[in-house]
Amino acid sequence: MNAKPEMIGEDLSLIDLYDLSLQQRTGSYVLHEEELTIIETSASPSIPYLLSGLEKLQIDLEEVRNIIVTHIHLDHAGGTGLFLKKCPNARVFVHPKGIRHLENPSRLIEGAKAVYGDKFQELFEPIIPIQEDRLIAMNDMDTMRIGPNRMLTFMDTPGHAKHHFSIYDSKTNGVFVGDTMGVYYPQLDVELYLPSTSPNQFDPDAMLASAGKIMAYEPDAIYFGHYGRTANRDEVMAQLKGWLSDFLRITNDLMQNKEAPITELLSSALLAHVASKLSVKGVPSDHPVYDYIKVDLQVCALGLIDYLKRKSVRTT
Image (cartoon, rainbow, N blue to C red; front, side):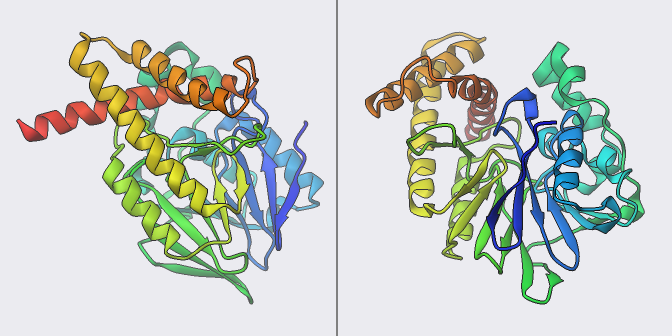
């Protein structure tokens, strides 16, 4: 396995999980404390990379006490049940609105199949239910001390999904944001943070409110589910606002002028818009980062269309 854990903060490691077989796509954070804690597992095909990374960190799986998933989308939590089988002393911490879906993942599976179709099995299976007695719900502003100098604070942060929380880490003054503040592309020499607007609970107003809640901590680090750490919180916030505005405008214009189905048209329009902005910054059109961006924007298009349809229903 090519997993190469790196230290990215005080008693904090990042393991590359090679989600979708892509490097620096989805990561798992390891907090080296008395209660060894792991944040995010990705999907089941990524678990061998997680296990390899922990082995390289010389961590015995019996040492793992806490597994935290920011939300229950399968690219963050789909492999949790499989991983938990290897960790006899661990518990799983999840948003209250997500806990029943980890006990019984049938609706998660159904939703993912609707989005990913024939690729579902390759990308996500197996998805293993988690026993109720190993699941713990964390509510808004709940705290958990995992070491003498490390307190985690859980924040309800909807916008990407209603079953999403973010976690403030007192030791590094950083926040694990899952997908709430978007996707970071460390493959680029320029900073790029795109919002993650996947279906079917995307809400831009809630997303910006959650981002403001996170920024109130004035974090020194933001830890993305996709992928890695940045210290430039102001740029993250500025890009989140800017791209959200652009994406909604492009979607609204297309929905006004085109008949359904428009998903492919929209994903192409979003890609062209992002590419034009990156071109100005010197990023060539054949840069490998587009393998990542294209995947993300295809899912974003579905969420944007779904949001505007829901909004239209509410206003009629």
